[in-house]
Image 1 (cartoon, one colour):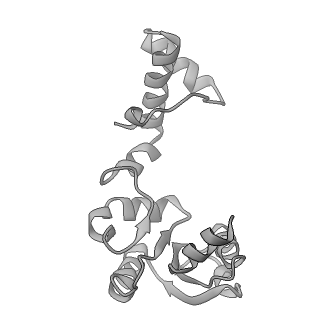
Image 2 (cartoon, one colour):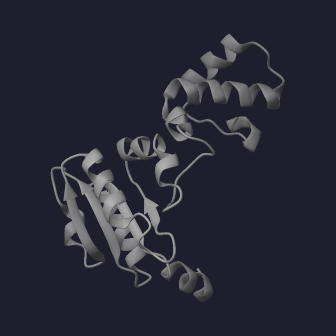
Image 3 (cartoon, helix red, strand yellow):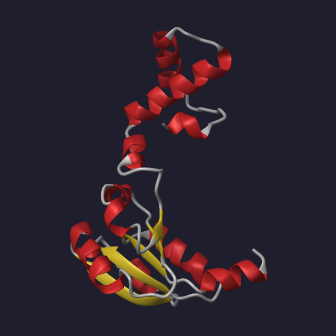
Length: 168
């Protein structure tokens, strides 16, 4: 990463909102490696592993994702000169935020797939299969949907080029 990019990123706060386990800790350490402290909103888990990171600027432990969201909005929404990055590490939290994107998009920079609920849609295994079948048929000319579905259900690997329109 260039020094200029790091300087620009450092103007923003980083908030990691996730169930506390090793993935958020890794994220906190990665951001901390560029000398940036991180605000952590951690849903109760078996451990409080992220609280031990020297890169945690503030560690807020909550009982539920809903409690964490309340903290996020009440304490951090609209409180910074530059929009903070809002990062997640687990399906439960990303689904929660994805279904409320319209409530927080003006305050944070975070994951989104173009419209409310779109990430959640593509976390569903059936939806992923349907997308794979649709895309594959576009590239190899196959029209036998049942055969393609069977092929993808049995396959361990899906490789293909994805165009923006495929995520419709």
